[in-house]
Image 1 (cartoon, rainbow, N blue to C red):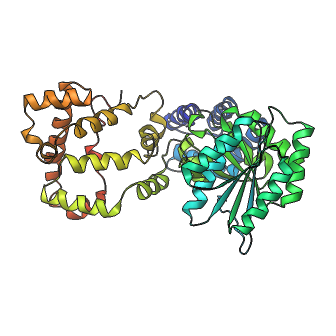
Image 2: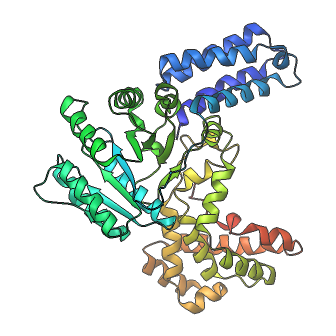
Image 3: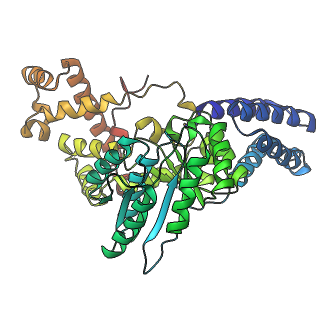
Length: 450
């Protein structure tokens, strides 16, 4: 995400770092290019103007110009001001005790409200609370069916009524929630292709009837300035408590994420970074600023590891690494856990120094599937003792996995090289225990990244 703006800013900062000496003149020249980069990223014009003014006031001061590494100091100033621009982290949902917490999702048609309702329900369910999804979007016929399907996938009940008006549906849903001890009610409301009086009247009626504890504006981040303008209009006419940005994984510019807090004064609560129901993340401005500036996002990476990797299995793996008894079954298990962390390109982009280097780099996700298919086509004995996989066995495994003998050879060679490398760590038990997963053993080499 944000590849284009990250690359533009990296180019500007590289020029500034290359200067033998920074002066007020060349700093202002560099910040002019930062301004252009932000405008090209579809950041709101007034937001850019104020941002550059604040950065300039700090960047041309004696503290920066006379510092040992002024180029790095300017990057820090931009980083700090980006965080201020996007606001403090505010991801908490204020749950109510003794009554259902009502969350109302609003936004234009096509912004991803229904899918976001499912993702939010999964997030809330994972926190140990009992959610209820409410299908109040009668404008789009498929919306009710879509929400019912999502509810089935999540084992979360969905309240809906046929041939009823949204206001009645919401009123009865709240009554149902109280009778069935649902702690959170998530209302999926209707949208339109554009903001009109009919839409706003319907949403205001629901708001008045339910008195929701939180109203979240859901918008497509890829629409950039249009998303910001819609957010401003919704906030003026209806009022909301926070924003959920969808499709952030496909947003190479970042205009909406950077502008929306400054324009509306309301925090970004969550971001959608993929189609799957577990692809909803809390929004942290400091982490996002680091990603935009190509600094990576170590905290989010660690959180992903903690959520995806079975620590008990990781400890068993550490023991096997120390004893040199690791086999392809262990390797397969680690691959499957790493796949849970999300797209590899996204995960690699969180590593400091790699964030703005991922643009244009093709990470072959199918390679993981090929590796998985090859191992699954082996017998239990072959997985436990890969050395017995001779020519005829390799041909059988290739045929069974739909791959080539060369693919099988490459996997066995990589596994052998990994085991050899692990022997060098054998004396460092502390390092092995901290490793947690076979990061060095992943097939990121030949055929994985191009």
